[in-house]
View 1 (cartoon, rainbow, N blue to C red):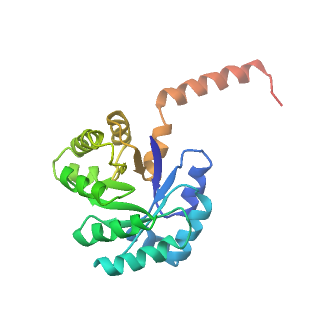
View 2: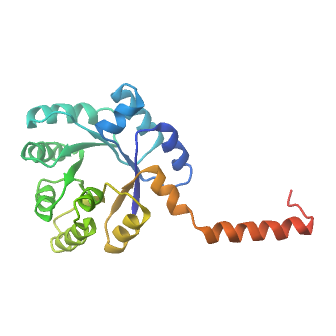
View 3: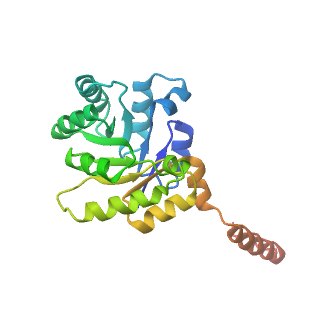
Length: 218
C-alpha cells in the first residue's frame, strides 16, 4: 500500500519524507489556506520535496474553467495530480485532462456508482471519504470493499483507490486488508502507526540493561 500525506504543511512533509514512508501528498483548499502562502508557490515547494503524486485541487465549478485551472496546476511540476470533484463537470474535465496525460484525482466519492463513473472517466485516483461516511453512521470501509471488488472485475479500469478522510490507524489497516492501493493520512495518524506501548517498554528495558553494563558503542 502507498501512503500519501494529507497536509500542505512543508515542515510535516519534510519530517515524514525523511522516514521513507511518503509516496505522495494530497492537499485541498482548506489545508492550503491554513499555510498562508501563495497556492501555486506552495504546490511547487511540496513537489520539490516529494517525487510522488501531489494533489492540487481546482476551485472552479464548470468543466471549462476546471480544465483551464487543471492545466495551470499541471504546469507547475510533472508530479502534480489535478484534484477534481466527483460531479458531472468534474468528470468531463477528468476525461479531457486524463486524455492530455495529466494525472487526475477525483475526490469526494461516497458511493460505488460514483467510483465506477470515475474509473470510466479515466481518473488516475479516486478518493472515497471513509471518515465522513462513518460520521453519518455508515461503515466507510464497506464502500472500500465494494470498490475493490468492482474494480477487480474489470481489468480495463486502471484507477487506483485512494482512501481519504482517514481518522485513525484502523482505517489504514482495514484499507490495506481490503486491498486499496493508497491511503492518504494526516501526519498525526501516520505517527500513530509508529507507536505501540510494548515497543516503548521493550526499548526502555534494553537501554536500562545496556546502561548497567557500562559499555558504549562509540
